[in-house]
Image 1 (cartoon, rainbow, N blue to C red):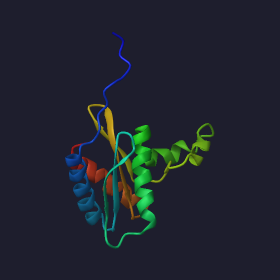
Image 2 (tube, helix red, strand yellow; image 1 turned 60 degrees about the horizontal axis):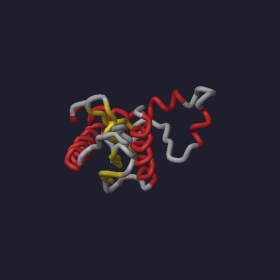
Image 3 (cartoon, helix red, strand yellow; image 1 turned 120 degrees about the vertical axis):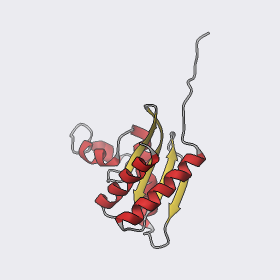
Image 4 (cartoon, one colour; image 1 turned 90 degrees about the horizontal axis):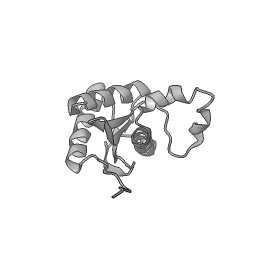
Length: 139
């Protein structure tokens, strides 16, 4: 019998909660008030945290960073360079594509299981906190 479907994997609620905790701790160490979003493999919001003093604008930015990273399996920092390419530059006009550091695919066994987006600091703070959180998470 021919299969017309495939099995996909997605981050669990428990794993998303652990990653939120790791990202919160990393952001505190780096020194900023974060907004942290985790999406599942399909780009749907799975977990979210906004510190009391974070910017309102950072909410959608964090969610879109997570969405962009999960959708393409690239960090949003990589998107900054990608959009400089003439052949890909028009992708900057695709809704929800966020080319700013702080978005990361969440991987397991070579497959994308979600995305992490951090916003609220400078681009380097968002990037540093995300890298530290993923390392503590086991990636």
